[in-house]
Length: 582
Image 1 (cartoon, one colour):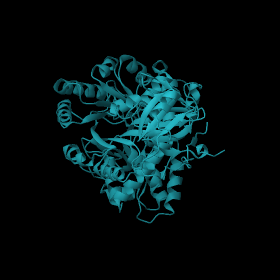
Image 2: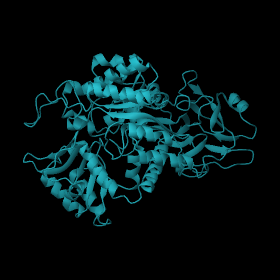
Image 3: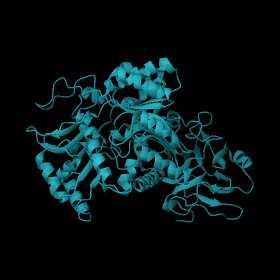
Image 4: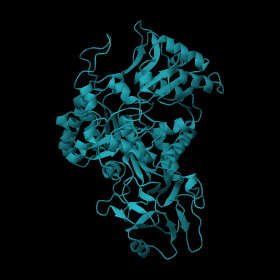
């Protein structure tokens, strides 16, 4: 299925796995792609056999004759050799900067690493670092975070780091594990009060353990940021690395799920330099966030200056609760009572008061912004839907609202997603093969756990279900093929966990592909730009090595991208897929 290129003057095609060095602004010869089975994700014409592209946009998609008729006689020809062609994937929930930072700068950890393996990696990483240099990294699995809150583990991290400050992020990105040197640089001592909506976790004797929950993590992130000499260059390289990873999996548009001003500035600079090879919709925190910096109206007003061709600061980000692994998700039913320290009526907590949320959301919408609302517990989902219902009564149907991560939803609230035109921002990467599910199962009741991620009910009700990786949460890469398979099979792709999770909620392959293409583009406000292969839209498409509509669904996660095209030019080519390769 290796794609080959030809033209009247034998113009060469892309020839390596690296992004095409050609500037985005450079004009390309029109092209015609044939020899493919093309899934358009366009309900008006789901399948085609050829497409024509010029000036970064699709001229025609349909038969070979239609494509040839639309293109110039000297158009470049691409023979797909039977590859499946699809729209570029749209990731509705990604932390591109955080993921890129991990790739570019930080200590890589796997969520399956044991505590001993983490300590060994910290020890090895420390050997090439200065005595005052931060060791930042991740991701620590939730099952390990459950066991770290002790002075013994704090001492072990101190020893492994050789006195260097350490900050490690967990797989939810809501929590951190730091050592004693880091606590000192953070200004946290034994009698330091917990920050609002955060916790410096202590043992039963009141001693600091180095585990940080929720907004306590911001104090650590601020200390790490203080140690970065050139933040602009640091972020720029991180975003470039993140984009490269996204393109290797076929992602050409995304919604950055929590975007602070330095990242907005870096994205705009990249776009102006022709380096931003994706559509990026941003979500600016409406409240103090895990990263330091201005938020809310101050950030919303600043964001206007960073709008560019491919950077769209169109959403606010609200965090309504925490995560179930630390029992900070707001639930309608109590959590499991597993230890003497657990209250039998523990239901987590809401970060926003209902009236305050309504007022803030109304102000946000009045500014022309949509909103992405993090709500992992069913009580938080209900709060979000109630607030949206209020704002809809004021402003009608124009604003776009997402509920992330649509994990636990009360039965009576399911129809409200479609009725209120609220997007279910789903994160199938968190289901499997992530260890997060194992941790959650120890916190919520079996009844609640087994009723999670009701995707079938949402799709059948007419709601928009849009998939997002939440990278670098849960998994070390934004691989959409893992999430796509999970939506279809409801099983762990790697076989590490037996059985299916809420099997009756499975989607068809076509529905799952729509959740990674057409539906997130619609959710992000990009439906007139990308997400489908249709005339007039950006020529964002991928060639893959197997037909996901024909293979055993259990094999979807083995799919590999051969080429990724953005705005009519290749931005990623797998080494084995380069023209002329074996």
